[in-house]
Length: 266
Image 1: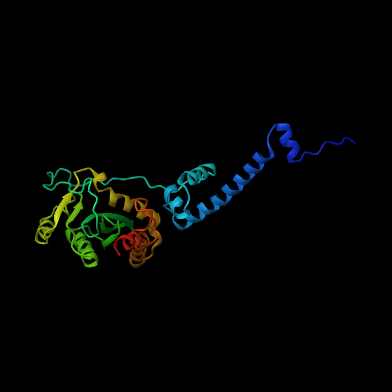
Image 2: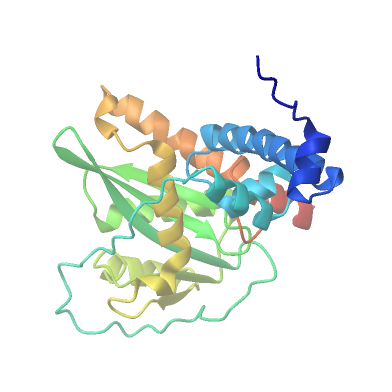
């Protein structure tokens, strides 16, 4: 009976010309990567829209390490495709208001609000959500839900923001007909608020809100039809806004908006 020589780690290292330390180091690295993989999957389970930057912040480790392990194991976060809305009123003349917040960095809360609205297709109809964000804290300070996008609908969201945080100095939006309405501009004038607007067909000039809505729909879930009643959908919307304000890590702030607000304002 032919006997073959036994191969242990020392003999393998000798044959391959490797040091034992390097073999143990590789094994240890693989073990650490597997642990990190489980941690990454756990974070993504709780926060479906997180990419490698937010995951790194949540785990308090370097983003390059997270990105390497995600690439190693083929872990990919869900990313919604950016879809800029095409306004029905594109032939309307340019608004008289300029973009006042370009390059602006407010030093306090309650100085600049940025507003916008989006829609959710549910039960063969649309449900609209209007929001106003404080540009300093990135917190959603006011919102309104409706089955119609009207000037009254966006003004309800604005008044909700005012009741929560007070009157701002500047309000920035796009050139939607709701924000260009006579009622809207007259109200801002009476309150002494400066109106700021993005250029037509330039959604990136209000990227704060566009980014929020992109992640909001991911956090809300893609199958809106799972909500059996309007009340369930509205409750879910409120929960996601609360989650965004209080728990979701904002990559610019490195923490949730409410945590940032309490850290820097109190």
